[in-house]
Length: 130
Length: 268
Picture (cartoon, rainbow over the protein chains, first blue to last red):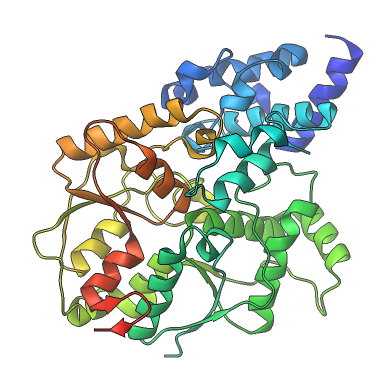
């Protein structure tokens, strides 16, 4: 773990307020995840990655953009580690560093249709940009 | 009993989900409930900002919560997203001193806001203040014989420790509501699974797969249509065009039908 990774880890833990040392690797989070197949690093692996300080790998993962924020893992975690919050913490750390969006604003017009609800655009913008 | 509430419609109910807003207002009026829209409310942001070190993006919710407190009313919303965000922010204001202090220092209300407002989803209002028995009596056009599945999704139920809405794994409030309007509620397993939410902007094929599984389960279980309270779920469900697709309506539209209300025209 580099000094920069240690700093990122500290920031992520501040953002999400989770204690990764409580994880007992039961895998209930991954079993509950509706986006499991879309993840390269699975929910149950997040606590270990953070404990080891492998923050660059987490920040470059597909997982942080594919997490749906559905709270299924947060609800079902028997140790109150709340993997969804860990994933969200890493995503926010990545967004803050890039200082921009994952989905660029100019990508959006071609993706909307007359029925696209504001809730969808607001959610994307809030999650994916600083 | 005074049934006057502060009302937070939310951004989508003013535009793409006008039906949800209009039917909510008209059914409320027909049931003797007064919904007073908050002046100058601002969008809740759609998703609850999880970062405990960010306060700015929680302030729109804090203003709405404080406005309801100043009027001495509970705060009602019918959008699942708004309900989720308002309730989570309210929990922060009640239980997280750092967020509470910073939000109050910025907001400069007459007196500090400390999470006093009670946030209610319209379904809770119908169940606890109006009463499903009253709805049953007033439902002059009951939906007899309609086999309807409740689609709860995520935002109404989780995290249950904060939302305290219903059992997150086996919810029943929408089924009880459907029974009150005379329909036959049909429970199916995937009613609390995620529709894919905001991922539909970037990867509609992915959300389509998730929605396909939900429709397949609902149809196999015997549902003829689904109801939801979330404009984003509604959109994702509507956009699906594979097999097993079922019609989808908002909960308040179903209630309006049972009460004999046509949108914008009042009781028929």
